[in-house]
Image (tube, helix red, strand yellow):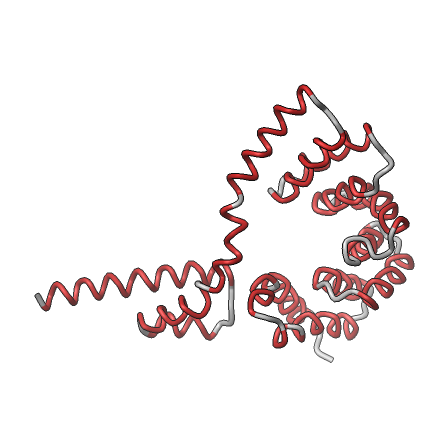
Length: 246
């Protein structure tokens, strides 16, 4: 009986450690957790309670993959009979959520060819073009959104336009747009792109400031937002590591 309990406990310890390590690798929380996980199975269990269970809210997007792809298939069939701008716009949005930016761009191309009086398809196509690295194509689409509403998509449009200017060699425009965007926006994506822009311009001290601004948000953020922002925290930390110390 004792050997059975020892065997069961050993497998339980291995299992909780595996669960904890897989989550740690995928989500990259604070690094002290790796020692907590490895020292004892109870530490791995504590990690699961503190980090894995609260992260469950972020997994909703994973569970939405199948309904989203089902809706994509439905729209792809519907468009054969009804190729309306609205159907193409919805399909483009679903493709963006699915990470399929090439198909998203194609869908917005077709939506725009049918109706050009609404700015959102241009903006969403610009987002897809940024993700595809087609910065020159993104500039006029994002300019249309910013001209229509300088605060479009909670100031994200302005930050993306600044990044597109930077990537197409329009340095003065990029600098002015980044200054304007960061004056009113707290989006980590915008801060990070601005830091990369400053680094490329040889303005390392300023790049460090904007990278640090991303990390400075971490202590005051609610837990669910802190988890969502982890990719930007990692990128900011990596950039700080590459920048020369002042």
